[in-house]
Length: 573
Image 1 (cartoon, one colour):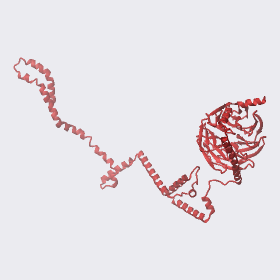
Image 2 (cartoon, one colour):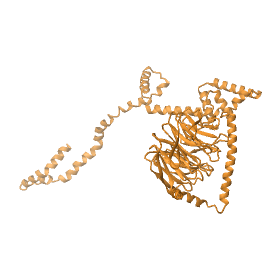
Image 3 (cartoon, rainbow, N blue to C red):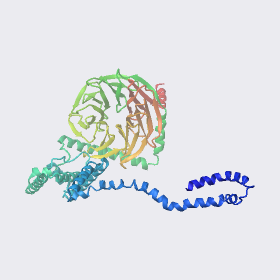
Image 4 (cartoon, rainbow, N blue to C red):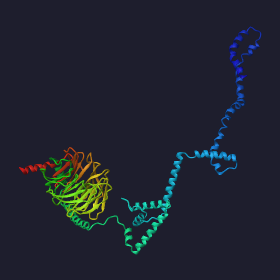
């Protein structure tokens, strides 16, 4: 009804106008006057629908709102699986509950919730394990800890393990046995420990020896005599060194800086004096005699050679090794030469090429070799993770020393003779006291294998070089690294101090160069370039006037100071 009225009202303005024109002359003025009220009628037509909205719209809109609500109460029963677990009385409800329980059991835990639950259970187990371990009574005496570990069938000690770490390991083992309900084993261990204690109290020497098990092996009488001899020799040498150092410090005429400047000036003028083909195969080692008149070299074919200096003429040949010769060294007091080889042996020769001794005992190939300053002992480093000390006169193995976790490559002796230094592929250098056999220093700093080691004649500096292309200077007094030299662009194969005063040191590298460094501020002084392949070894003559290098290019190169060459020329004139 309202819509019809609205339609008539809308069409009335057009029809009304026509009706007015036609009705002007008519006699019914009342009807046309009443038609124009479309304006007052329009508001009256709008009000009724507005007034009727409160009564009509709710009744029409209510059904669509109520229709989607009935499905909602169906979902809550899915969230009620825990309630039926307590049991129900009605059979129908039981069947419904069983269905709900079955559906809930299938989708009760997701993978993430299961992992969280497992982590929680594991954390609780670890917590309970720690609580049980804390409640266990663990011996505090290291000897008792070792004994209990042995009785439990565990290693008494691990490499590098300290007393507290050993005790914590025993606690963890005991807690694990307790959790696994192996108390009988623990009780048996306790009973054995009590029996051992009672036996020790009664004077049972064997059980007492077991409790006091030492982490060393008993040495021979020859080793004891050698330690005593080394102690006497090193005491005298160190006293002379300290006396000389004090004299030079207190003497006003002694100018250390001037001497160092002069030595470095000599080194700055180093030039290639001679180059000689040393062998058919690449050369691996070289060494000057104590007088500097002879140079010894060794090659991959296992042959060693002696050369006259400074002409570099072949003097004699050393043949005897069945594998490549890895290093060669001159004795500091006699005209004896020692060679190391990959055939696991070291040999002692005289300058005429006659074999004097063969040192056998290593289980893997040898690397570097060095004489003790007294000339009575020989040190060899091997890939069997040991270095050994040999008696030159008897050829007896005096000491088999372990301590590196990987192969040992380099070995050197302190100028006083009291200390030995070793370096290896475990990126570690160790300093050993030959008088007691103890490892007194472990020098950690290199990040790759250490291949070269050398003691300074001043007695308190040590140089090492390795595959990380750096040369590190260590202060034995401070027990730490003093300076790191970024020396080369490839690995450092050898490091040597000038043997008389230690004013400079020389490094050889696989980057085909050898470099000279000042021992005062560790700055570069001279670079020796000339080899066409990697340099494997070098040596410096006693007074620092000559430097010899050998390389995989099979050549021996002799580097001499220019001032020395001039002096030699003047002497010849």
